[in-house]
Image (tube, rainbow, N blue to C red):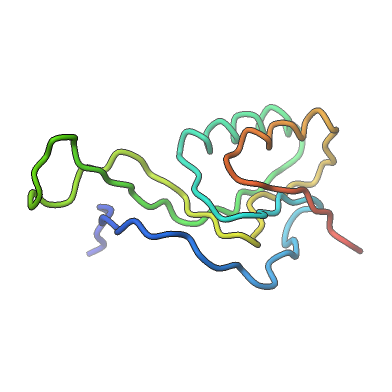
Length: 128
């Protein structure tokens, strides 16, 4: 039987880089991650909504890792009462990976939506 409940994880810093993942697999353009960080579900929903408005006729692919629950205790809780409740699901993003891929070239005004992300990113193009 498969357990569909999320287990709770310890808070650890995101270290390291992904090696040799700068190549694009599906699309002609990609969003390359320049620093490690976390994306929340709300930030990801905002990004998907904006991308669906931009790419009405063409496709885009999201290459996200698995969501991890983030927990916290309530203020004023005494020690020893166990792990806190899950308050958000986050995506741990490691520097050096490709987050999104798409086929249609974007204008400079369209690229401003990536500035709303809490991590540094750049756009790469598939070389022939």
